[in-house]
Length: 137
Image 1 (cartoon, rainbow, N blue to C red):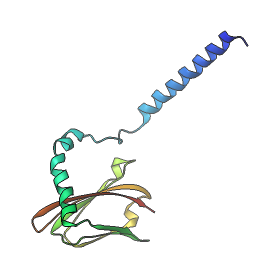
Image 2 (image 1 turned 135 degrees about the horizontal axis):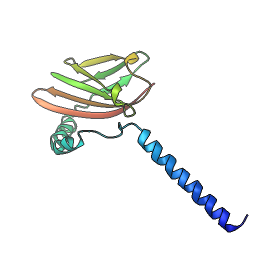
Image 3 (image 1 turned 135 degrees about the vertical axis):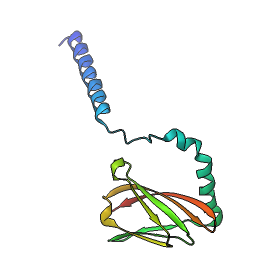
Image 4 (image 1 turned 60 degrees about the horizontal axis):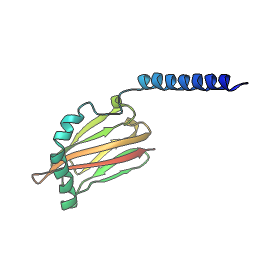
């Protein structure tokens, strides 16, 4: 084989590779980014203050899982929400409200894999925000 055929075959292989990447890009779901990222960016100062309040008051909740439940324990709580976000599929996100110091959720409600947990709560008139990742087994 001469160098001309090798060059044409190499160029054709590269073009096929790039075409496959473009097709894959358009087939991938758009769950990899927040649709309201701009609004969240503008409100980040409030979130940052609430995360710092957790550190200042040493109020980080305890997250743990056993065979049947996911449990979140708080030192003090008036009310709040816990948001379980599935990075790979936005349709599986779940939001729970609570007003108890102990929150127990059945593990059967969650698929195995990585989950992002975002907890907003108030206690004694202060607002808190805590974020963590959990791998459901």
